[in-house]
Length: 200
Image (cartoon, rainbow, N blue to C red; front, top):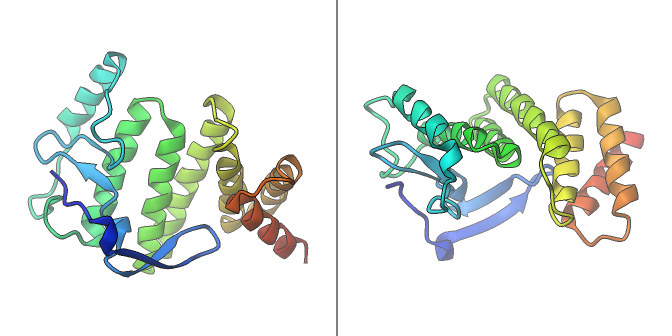
């Protein structure tokens, strides 16, 4: 099983404008996806043991048959960025198979953050683009709760902004701050700040 990080060792130093956490000491971002070393099933640590509906088992088994993990990658040892990126990529495949586009989007977003830490802009933007596509599917097809919707709309705006789609960014941030003008959500506050930045 994947290595886990004890929460008392995790300390967030700051957040970037797209809510990427920067840690002091242990980088918890490297360990949030859990991977089974035998079958390579992967999911977020908070969801790894959740029941999987039988209707998705064929797709999951098909993915497991096709996965080839490099011999020098271990998910149970101390992780480097390469192993962490692979763990999120696996989780994205399984979330996609389980028809969970919101979670798929979050996995690609975390992959982008890890590439950012490596200063690999090309792969960061590729991952951001895939995250945006999945967030669009999440918004249009998933049954999003009112509590979660501000986060989804924020990332539709933020990722559009980072990918140079300024009209889309303005539209999404406008929807966010108008629909949730009285919300205390941190995503609404961050979206309002980004909206002001775009307008200036």
